[in-house]
Amino acid sequence: MTEARAGNRGSGRAAQRRPRQGNPVSRLFQSLGLFISQIIDELRKVVRPTGSELLNYTIVVIVFVLVIMAIVAGLDFVFHRLMLLLLAG
Image (tube, rainbow, N blue to C red):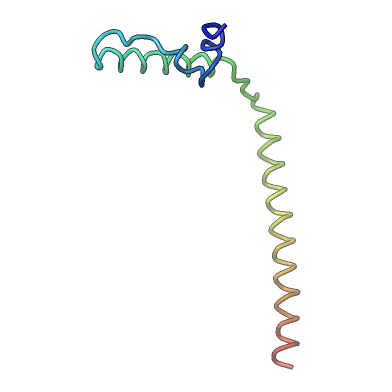
């Protein structure tokens, strides 16, 4: 019973460890190759917008930024006037 329990103890990393094979340089290049292939696999899943979608998104972002700028400028003007009234009074 203790042998069965001993297998369930610990962090689980010990069970996942494999003996290292090859020299460090070859392992480095294998890791880099795996990393780059995983990047390419993920980039294949990316859905890129069409030209019209990109134009629509750009217009929405520009309009949103302009609206936020107007709100901040209006609040700045109001607070500036309030400070002038309170402090210069």
